Amino acid sequence: MKTKMLKLNYKKIIILLTFCLVFGAKNFIFAEEKNLILGGQKGWPEFSVSDSITFGKGRFGYKSVQLATNARKKTDNTDLLLDFEKASVKDSTQKYYTEKNDLLVIFNNSVMGHGCGLSRGRGNGIKLKGAPGTIFGTEGNTGSFAIEFWLKPSIAENGEIIFSWNSSRTINSYVMYQMILATFVDSHVEWDFKNIFDGYTDNKGEVVLKSYSTIVPDKWAHHVLMYNEETGLLEYKIDGHTEDLKYLTSSGHERGTIYQPVLGLPDSITICQSYTGSIDDFRILRYLAGDVASSKTESIQSLSGEKYDTYNVTGGRFETKPVMTVPGAVLRKIDVISSVPPQTDIRYYIRTGDNFFDWTDSYPEWKSVKPGEPIEQMSGKFFQIAADLFPDGDGRNTPSISEIKLTYFEPPLPLAPARVTAKAGDGYVDLFWEYSLDDTAAGYLVYYGTRSGEYIGTECIEGVSPVRAGNVNSIRLNGLKNGAIYYFTIATYSKLDSKIIGRFSDEVYARPGKAR
Image (cartoon, rainbow, N blue to C red; front, side, top):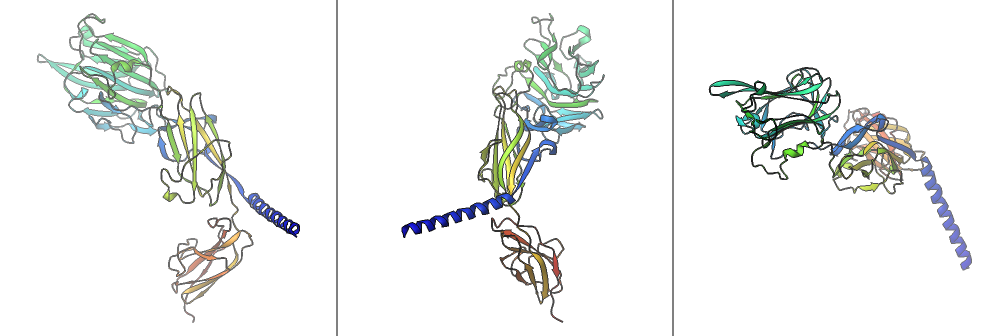
């Protein structure tokens, strides 16, 4: 007897397992594989979070996501800083105010940070007036100073002006013209100082520094002009290499009386006047006697080092906006096209859910995923992708992502019901339909509204649109206005997940009213 019962139980178990496998296989077979591509030929969507991230040129010529280089930050020595990180061009130190500006800010083409300035060769660049206490807003000895910027000229044409300041100084009732000017001359940069260095009389008080290197159009280069009041050295560097220098001393060398820069009446400075090309992180640094380098200061000697092209060693992060698929979509894997130089790294994260409006920074939880490896137990109507990018230990190289492809499965959508009819009555409409032929159908949603294709009705006693009718093939909607026309459509929801809703049926309409 026990043996017969065991055999019967085994048969039941086998039948049950067979049913589950067939039913599961059937639904898996009809589930549709989908691909969602970010980047690549389609380009990247707008990010909800973008920290130290910019765009560059990636694999196959695609736009890639990569780390942004470090934009300049103001320190105690910063006299002026134009970082071009916002749409409006302003001095970040708020020590200089803008009198006139013809520069534009463009993003994702910068060399430092997110944005850079663009001068189109028309207008007067940007004109700035310094407040008292700034180098060009104060009469007298400047002390040690540096003028630093990144430049990418389009043509480097003769006469284009990068920087200019004009004023005058009175000595013993004699008015002496003063000028500081940086221009392009024969594909080189030339700095011209007239009557700036007190006591210097050679060449009628004029000092000229000229770049040894030829300026290459459409290429970023780092420029810095420095004066050291302790040695009298005026030096010009491009990309960390000395282009020209001069000791402003009585001997013309390191020893002798030092000729200090003394400015006359305060006047405005102009940057990128009649210049065509891009400029980034323009700043002026001032070092008064007794300055001590600290975490908030930067020594003038540090500017004489190599060019600044490092990335933030803590890395950067981006998060996409939630991407909508369908309810019940199951994420299977991600594949990426990327470049990961030695010591750099990229880490990917995914989170999913059915309603992103209640999401926070930490909910739903981000789950770490690896490209090409299977992803388990991640489903929902919305997907969100994030990535952390890390440079190498020296902050010299950045990884980049050209494309992210998500592979997921959409559950089968249940078929809509057929032959929907509507019959109007006094303040109500009766709806009838045939059951869906889909065996995954669990019930029906009734959508209604007063405009064709817009089912946003609210007055029905049974509820706002859509009304959940359940697994029936008719319903009466009460509380409708007599004389008004209403439009109806019906959709099936799935027994796999009630949030999986099929396509709409054919639309029908009816106008409630009292019987005549």
